[in-house]
Length: 264
Image (cartoon, rainbow, N blue to C red; front, side, top):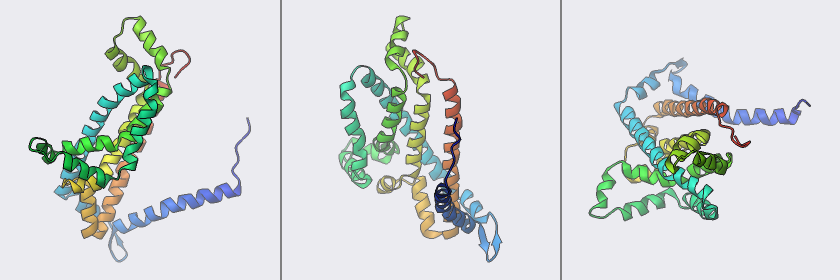
């Protein structure tokens, strides 16, 4: 087996890329730790963490993210399973629908939803955070769809289904006990991407007048410079913890994938 070697140009571009990523991060981290001329500490972080608004807004965004994930998976997993197994001709249609949230700007989507739900009965939803969860289901559709589509393409879905039916399993049992265990990594990817999107989305939440975590970040950034840098580092750390978690869980899931008919 030939050993892969990097040329000097490869090393140069790796260094340039690392510097492009790490230098601004280092500058933000240093600025967030400044407490005076030549003095450093964690007082800016304490200011953020002790702010009750931080906890309230963060928990609200987390709640909306969990609701978005649950609704997205309940809608998309059975749909993708049925299309992949029984209605492959609808795949181009789903591909087109999944691209639409990229085409429609978030501000247009928010204004359209506010107009549609501005009815005597439906207007009750506008005062509840569930309207945000329903909106984010649409916004996260491309990520959920692509993750689940890749997961179901990676397994022999027809063989798994026929094997389960041969022992008397129904459709619900097949979906829960056969399909889902074999697309766990795809599910984890969809969950992580959706939660990252929700925890960082500002435009729709601000237009709908919800005080979510991104709205709080924007407010702090407009009023307090160094605590805003500390908040950015906290948000960055939470994102990387999530990525590390999905890598660790994904590695464990990959080692337990079921092998049926030569498909993993």
